[in-house]
Length: 436
Image (cartoon, rainbow, N blue to C red; front, top):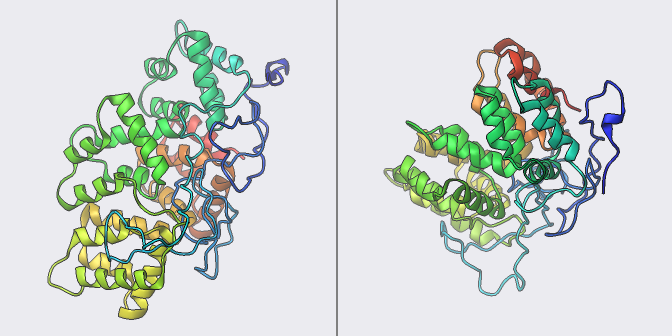
């Protein structure tokens, strides 16, 4: 279905979209046709990352409400992409630190439904409608001598994930060219990076940033953690397949080539994508067993059994990990995060702490991640691009994050951006930051 032609309005950018609609409790069933393009109502926007924690002030769209903590933060609801958390009881893990987790006899009698792919993670799903105007405008902006950077910014900063998928598809079918390749040939530097990240959508952006985090000398550990920590099993599998399809290499093999030792083992286990979702059952006995296993592997012996700790963390849902953390502190009178600080260092420490913090409060985790790469004294450009684009897919959550940054830290990333950047890259980032 064609949408009203925005070009009919004089002196108006041709890429005006209506405000995003409400946020229903579930991601659309696989193969269900979304509404027409431009903006359609009723889809969950892209509130990263998946694998939510219990009841951290975010109502059940992707992170379900659990019994902890009692005082959720006063921020608007929005959750990780594409996840709907049922009201779950907790999954059995009767062997402490066992990975992958095993079933608990025949209980529950029916396995919980797997969390579906997040919005923008099905490479075959796109919005219906007509994006020929956008495709033509993109080609015109890059054809011939010179580049119309303003047109590129206007087109690429407004669509949601499925609308962007339609634009990419239309560009290929109508123009007969690859949008990513054309953008890379016509732009450069950070401006190129942010436009490509937008044009590729959530899944393609993750894959491209993963490749960047692993390429060259050394590993961008923080960017790697940003992308992989807290993702749903469905999204991890989609990321692995898309990575292989694009680079003809296994993501797991590339991780093994870049990392080593217990950190490598942790990420290989994580990419196995068997971590229980929050709808899985567990009981107090399995929590108790994992608490005792964590104590044995850390404070209960000389040295640290890193593999055992990793197995407990990756064998527990976010909900169960919160229960483990609470019981650990009640029993041993020390917070689990403080024990991790004592027993671990480096990349593995950061990864474990990230899982725990995100399990406790996924919304606050997003706030802290954006704040960590956009400070008054410095900016981490690669991570800033990643987080700005990632949050941009979910406008309501992004607005809540911006409000939290102001309330908690008096931090306005728009002001910081103007301090460190100029030119078309600054214009693009401000366009993302200032969107409502």
